[in-house]
Image (cartoon, rainbow, N blue to C red):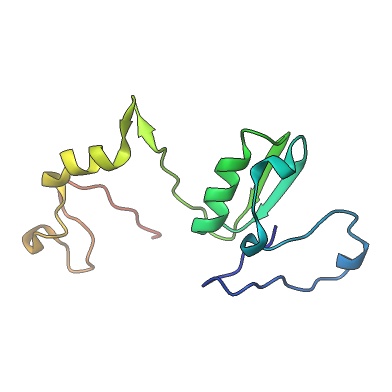
Length: 119
């Protein structure tokens, strides 16, 4: 599957594409997970559509492989049976982004929060 941005279908050209023996499709044409039962699926990208499709396919396919340019941060929908949204609401008092005194000059959180730096 080739996943484009902003719901505009983009499937890039590459050398040897015409010789690829399997189906190549864009997420905009994805309909039913059951159509891929027992197949090996390769998902390109980690945007919302790609991640949702890949997670839904795991029930039916033999394997799902994702190829991404930048390592994404995936979170489960539930932790110990609690929806992750509920955990976020319960832990919102730790959110320092709304409290500017806890922000460093670079915009990262100085305390109570987790932050990720590429440096």
